[in-house]
Length: 438
Ligand SMILES: Cc1cc2nc3c(=O)[nH]c(=O)nc-3n(C[C@H](O)[C@H](O)[C@H](O)COP(=O)(O)OP(=O)(O)OC[C@H]3O[C@@H](n4cnc5c(N)ncnc54)[C@H](O)[C@@H]3O)c2cc1C
Image (cartoon, rainbow, N blue to C red; front, side):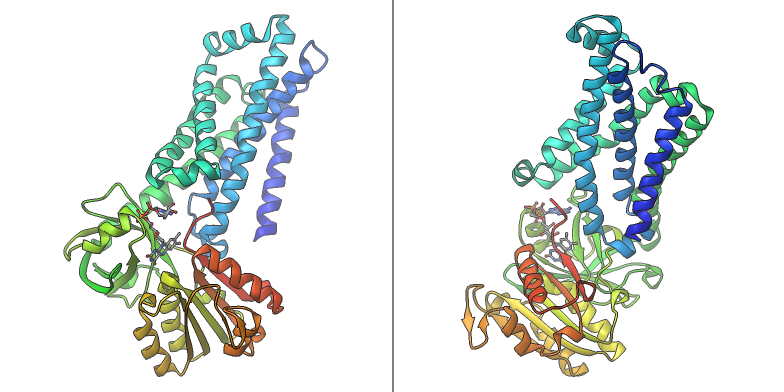
């Protein structure tokens, strides 16, 4: 899948370059400022292509999401975002310098003429400002300081930037002006990318929620800061959700916030169940949610499912509230009769929520369950906690197992390293992080 996507990207770069040639893009090369102008046009076209690729990566297309997972797609989206930003900046600089060379005027005067007197460059300027704002607020340091919702609102500006950028491309783009093939290519590309977003991020969720009409049916307190919420609705047997997946949830009274929560039980066709730890405003508010509250869910998302399994021996590793998808997967694997080992890591025994359910399920399917509590600096009979010897003591045949790992990013990275040291093949390891690439 990754190779196929890489090939599609390379092919598109080649087509864009070809269409530029067909549209007489290189004709001005020998003119004063010609090289800079050509570079400016090409970087603009590649920037538009990268921006559309970014839109597709977060369009949540099921055929991309299921094999690759939202976490990986979000990481690529973030990585390609930096390319978009640099290409767009290069486009602006090269075009300003090239046109100034062509007209023999100072660069500052040329920028004024371009922004204020050239058709649709004003729109493109707004697009650039929006993209720079998205880039700046996505830098790690800014991202940590901003509330998720504020960052998200700025990020939505990128869609407006796509439309404004397109309008300026229609008026000034070399391919649009010079070649019907170019027009066809770019119209199709923009249409497909924006259409995909509208269908999968707006149309499909609205249709599913009208159909299933979700409501909270009961709320169970698991500990001082964790609740389990049961959600009912119509025809839930027709919702294609699986153990290990998550939805983006919105609740009446706080519609403006969408939070990702994994299913904490295998969907049974009647109810969906989530278990929420209070980690900030939104999740703290959910601790007091009442039965009857309307729910809007977008999803299911995630590739952390039994479909990924390559063998019938499985090790499930949960850290803290990362137990939620692991609990659901244990149920699914138990029904499949697999050979199961479960490790549940929590810093304190009272923090090991759903442990009683895990014990009951493990007894029922004869899985070996290890609940490991204590600080992460703890060193025991088998060396450092969750270190190679400790993991081997709990799962001696770890190399023969598929491993499903979910927990906070720090714990996930540490266990990943340990498994690497133990020689576990990367293809056997399936992870879910309770944080998207940031
Ligand atoms: C795939 C996935 C599955 C998850 N499953 C569970 C679960 O089953 N149970 C559970 O208790 N927690 C789960 N989480 C974590 C949960 O989403 C956050 O704790 C919750 O959104 C925090 O929101 P807040 O308003 O309480 O806190 P805030 O203070 O607003 O945020 C705390 C942290 O959560 C992040 N966050 C907030 N909103 C979102 C969002 N819409 N999308 C992505 N990140 C966000 C913020 O960036 C910040 O890092 C999961 C997270 C992910 C990414």
